[in-house]
Image 1 (spheres, rainbow, N blue to C red):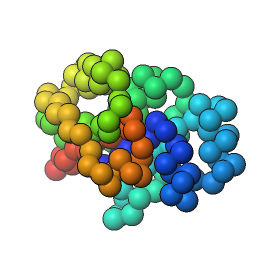
Image 2 (image 1 turned 180 degrees about the vertical axis):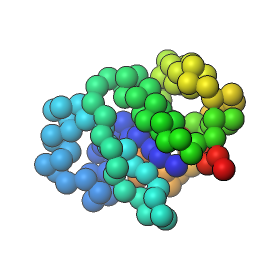
Image 3 (image 1 turned 45 degrees about the vertical axis):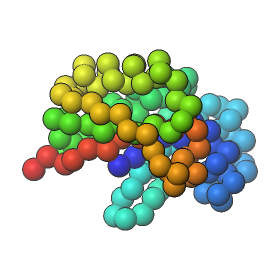
Length: 127
């Protein structure tokens, strides 16, 4: 499971992002990926660019792990994510061989940490 927060002020307010990193990311339009690995949350990658570009690149990176089962992909979103981003990500997922795409709105814990307009992916690992 991985999330891409679009509004980094929530990570900054929660102490997960320093003020210097926050300011740098705002100026350079950089967005970090927060992943669940071995039961802990960590920032693993960074993407640069527009929201649509970042969301599709994030999807490509998530699916590039060969162990991801492409039968079904769960796409998570917090309130405020534009529908054009949802449509672009769904289309890109289908083009990358995902057979079923399901959108689920995040709950209060993810939204409190990642803020509005966050997008996330969850999938089963193939055996």
